[in-house]
Amino acid sequence: MKMLRPLDYIIILALVCASVFSIIANRSTTSSKILVSADNQKYEYSLKENGIYTVPGPLGNTVFEIKDGRARIIDSPCRGKQCIHQGWNLPLVCLPNKIIITAEQTGEFDAISE
Image 1 (spheres, rainbow, N blue to C red):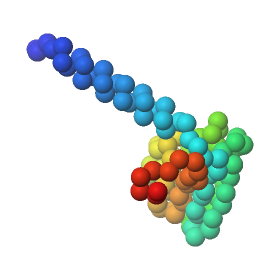
Image 2 (image 1 turned 60 degrees about the vertical axis):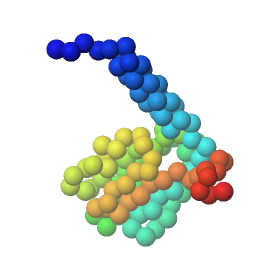
Image 3 (image 1 turned 180 degrees about the vertical axis):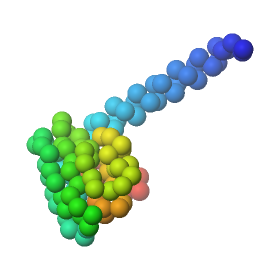
Image 4 (image 1 turned 90 degrees about the vertical axis):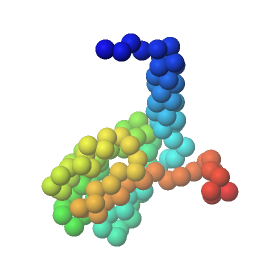
């Protein structure tokens, strides 16, 4: 069994710091709205209002939750339920039920959009 060298600890620490920074940057969103595209229909919800919402898709209703400025899918009629396992990340996608949930982009511009 090999022992870790000092450089290994530095690399591990750098990866942990990068992960924490990524999580913090992801949580501090500048958007205030959730945009939902469901089977060629568009819906808009406020990220400031906690609640549980239902949108219809071709397979049935998909249920998502908005809480503390974040969103997640909590129920869907699709077979694999991968959309539920996406957690609180955006965008959320349920391909079988044709549901896409994104945050409205406001505030900062990146190099591509400038």
